Image (cartoon, rainbow, N blue to C red):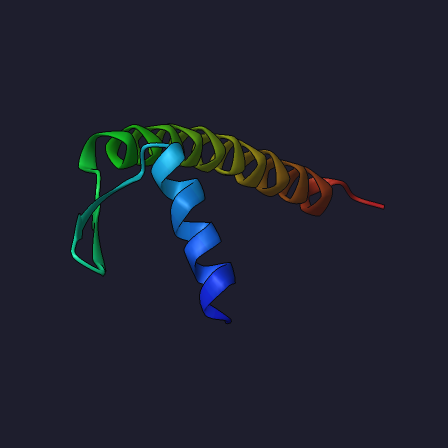
Length: 74
């Protein structure tokens, strides 16, 4: 990745509040901003729980359908 592209990405992350930067002379240092990242992590965790629950329900339904199919005499 070229330096200008990398710098653009860091600038975008800074505008979004996900990183903070400090400039000392010609050196710019970046650090992660934990609070916005925690909010993102919480949202992702909620989505994960939701989809795990839905997939568990689907699994139970499929197993029930399979058991019913196995019980049917043809």
